[in-house]
Image 1 (cartoon, one colour):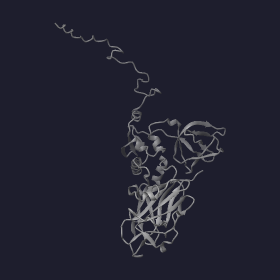
Image 2 (spheres, rainbow, N blue to C red):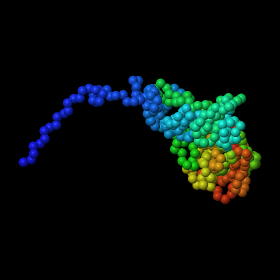
Image 3 (cartoon, rainbow, N blue to C red):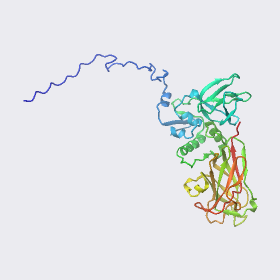
Image 4 (tube, rainbow, N blue to C red):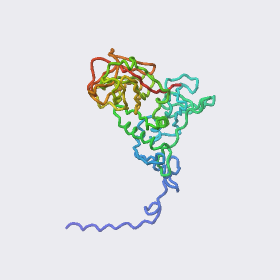
Length: 408
């Protein structure tokens, strides 16, 4: 016969209450105190606000000017690498070693080979708003605090006699009473920047998202905010300059077409193209109405981009008048970096209308106009957006307005 089943197991007797029984209070782990959870490395209590910051969430809540609450991914706010905005929301790094070049005089700060103001320059520079990591802080015999950049580029100084403070420690995160990140700008200024960051995060290679210019009635305030956040670290801060590429008077120009695409290159420093000037030609003469046109931009060589309509981004709109100077201010400025080709395409909005964008007479391939900052190359005209000439080369006939940083 089978053996009898084992007797049913009896529950263990209740353990007396105590620190190891599971019924009473557990011993307090190291790093906790009576006030609540704390950072085990410092032993300091966390406030409700800091718990929100240290939670590791990739969705951050922003209090914009105390008027509007919005949420964005951390990666969106860090879309412009190296900016003060990215530094603030990166969620990593030791802020005591993070500094920011103020650049109140709007000049670049040259990096030195040694902790000495008279030491040779390395060829690198910090631009206004740049945030950087510091490996070493050294007080010099002249009383100036020198900062060794953690990336190995060299040394900069915290202040300069006769000028004042140049670099300051990056500020800690500003939080409101509910732990939301406080943005000390109005929604009218900051929300367009958020839209730009969202597009910047998703931009494709060779198709950079143009820097916005902000609300029309708040352009200067918007640019100041971009400088403060380090979104415009190298451009938009110097004097306004013009490259005059008008080889033929507007009232004498005879060549025109639906559109003209041409290439531009910066020589040694980045520039920000903010407006252009040219004119139209109409077969109906001086009495014709101005024609509406659109300015498109893209990054890359012209011969490659002409067949890639998806690569072009609208940068501005305006009107061109028959054989008269017509200025178009760009809603999205064109940032042109050295050694990288950028293309500009000016096109009318109507095919076969009997009027179009003016340009110069045919010329050999190559540079059609230049100054110490920029080069403009002859381009191709078009009869519609996807139909460009492939024979001759035609120069842009007009002016480019731009800003650039000034080095020290």
